[in-house]
Every structure is written in C-alpha cells, then in structure tokens.
Image (tube, rainbow, N blue to C red; front, side):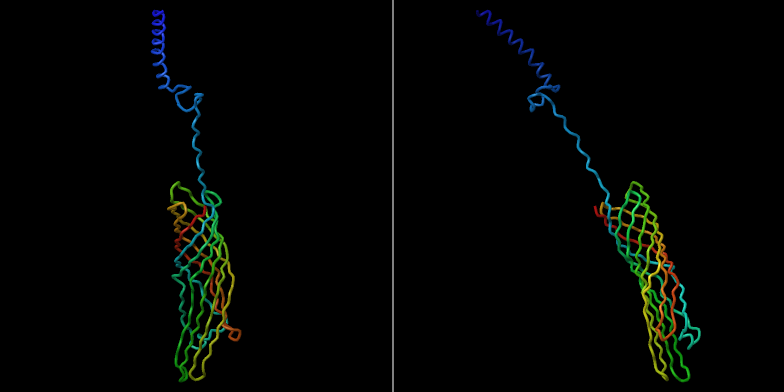
Length: 270
C-alpha cells in the first residue's frame, strides 16, 4: 500500500514538474487561451486603428485692406464758360491726385484649393482740382476761386487663382469687375470790390465702370489669419460736375488709372 502511494506521488510530482515549465513558456510566448489574463475564453480582441480626423479648409473669409496709389492723374477739362480764364486769361490749375489712399473691407468664398472670389467695398481718398487768380482791374481788386472735388466708393467682384506651394506662402493672380459711385462737388467764388461778389456751386453722383488686375502674395501665419500683400492696377471712370444751372460750366475728369500697393489681413471662418 505504502509502495503504491509512493509511486502515485512520484508520478504526480514528475507530471507537475513537466507541465509547469511548459505553462510558463506558453504564457511568456502569449498563450492563446489565458495569456491576456482578462478574457477567460482566451480569444484576443484586436485594438482598432485610430480613425483619422478630417481637416477641412475654411470656406469663408473676411478681409480688410489699405492701399497707397500712384500714377493716377486723370485729365481735367472745363466745358463751357470758365470765369477765371475769361477774367484773368490763361491761369494754371492745381491738381491734388496723388499720392492717394484707399481703404476697404470684403467677404470671400474659397471654391477649391486654387480658386476663390470675394466682394469688396473700397473708399478712395478725395481728389481735387483748383483754379485761383487775383488782380487789380480798373482800380478794383478782383479774385476768383474755382474748386472741384471728387471721391469714389468702389464696389467690385474679384476672382483669384492661388498657386499652392505646400508652404504658408501662396502667390496668386486675380482680377475684378464692378462699378464706382463717384461723388463730385464744385464751388466757384468770385469777388470784385467795385461790383460785388457771387458764389455758385453744384454736386453730382454718378456711377461709372471700375476694373482691377492684381498680383500678390499671401502668408498664412495661422489657420485663421493670413497676411495679404499685393500690387493692384485700378481703373475708375471719371465724373463730371457742373457749377449751377445759371452758370453754364462743367468740370469733366478723365478716367483714373492708378497703380496701388496694398496690404491687408484675411480672417478665415471654419
């Protein structure tokens, strides 16, 4: 009896000694049944791959710009009576056309990686022309001032082609079409110490064609903000302003063709 128990104990000890190393090796290598220590069925659950978060480019943006203009000196003609030249002869004209300044705002839409459009409203600084003269005629002091001013509000639809470089720097070319609301005022003051004085004036509001061509560079320094620097050639049709119904004289401006250097910011709306 004792001999049989010893044999059974010896066999169990040998079996445990053989099974224990195999179990430890299986656990070390990743036992398919119990190595994870969590799932008693031993079926491993694969970890799902992370889903990439899509990155969408902004479709809408707002912009604000400021420009300095040069080279825009429209012609000036006086149609009808010119009281200063009739009184004093050929008198020079003082023009104040440049440098000019333009400021504006706009809203745009990005149609794709290469094409976008925007609608802009710009206010052009006041331009003016003036004739002044004075003299003693027949013992009387005579003086006259003929001053005409012109200011434009420019509304334009612009389109741009962006040349993507894979960097924050994006060159582009563009063009725009629209119209300008030209507001002109004219005042004529005439004084003669022997006869007296009179003043006359008029104002007008006219809508003229406007167009532009642009080439520029954008630097995106964040996902919301971009710096825009560009050259713009601006064309605006000129207005005409009379003096009054009783004084048949009209000052007529030629078209404004101006070279502008513009800088501004764009704010993207996601």
